[in-house]
Length: 461
Image: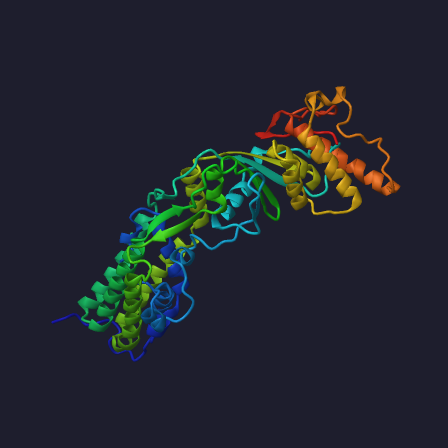
């Protein structure tokens, strides 16, 4: 004789089946993105997860055929975009030698810019700490030297799964609640929990069969050096290296390769299974006992907690590690922070030399779009000095004349114009001093010393 089921005489009905199909869908899809980051994660989806209808709808839009478009209407998305491996817009880019201009780059340029932006403060070479240095709004520039030319298509190694032990919690919770329903012969709730386990596990496996892939276009033979500038809103990155080492950042992408491309029939079949799960649970869970419904709800609650944990992981940081360590092979990076944008712009030009004056002028106009007479005079003088620095730039600043002749009388200049151009010349001198590592006269006790782990320099304006 089977044991008496708890709450047998209760007339209360939770009626949670409808909510179970919608609640937690976004979290579950976000958690599924970890399948392509951790090794073996595709085998750990065997638990009754909430949000089956939302998951089915999102997966169904991956299918590219009339059949799948009819079942799951909407805009077809790429799997890499759905799982946040692609889709972010990167900064503006200009190639100095190639003449390439891109108003916006892609996901990998975004990742690289974020990696430069998050450089630890103690590794930043701060220029504006001297009281003699002009400071308006500090702006940073990173000089990155790239040497490795990746293959046109590569398959980066995935990380070891540190979340594996936690996956046992929702799996054991689903099995335990299903077993409890089986012991008390609540066949409706037992079968619905088991159906959720099977549909979720199969979907996780099928999605996990997508192979994490890096691709970038092959460069033409004889292409010039790929030196260029990534121009973000608050961060500038100078890329130096052969064209084949630069294009992985500017035009490369992460993607998922499935054997069912381009129709993705196997993913569509999983969507149908998840939809069937939702409809079946909608009809049969209310037929179960109140105890079985509580068990069903408990399995969903534990699974939702686990999915929430997975979705909270910083997946972008994992992508950045893959890009920096495996694709680019840990490129050499040096970050500088200047007190003014003009000093930063001149330093960028110096970092891009040797280059044609006209090409450098385009970069300078991108960084400083000012087009007044004063600015144009200053820009022309800076370009000439950058292209022809002369031996004076390597002489101690206290033993040489200024790099820019400030005694020239400019026709039509007002006193305010002369004051402005003098200030701008001072910013340019700062950039030259930093680039050629010439210390200023008024070096403080902190200059060029390691203070609390941070290199700082004091360059007089």
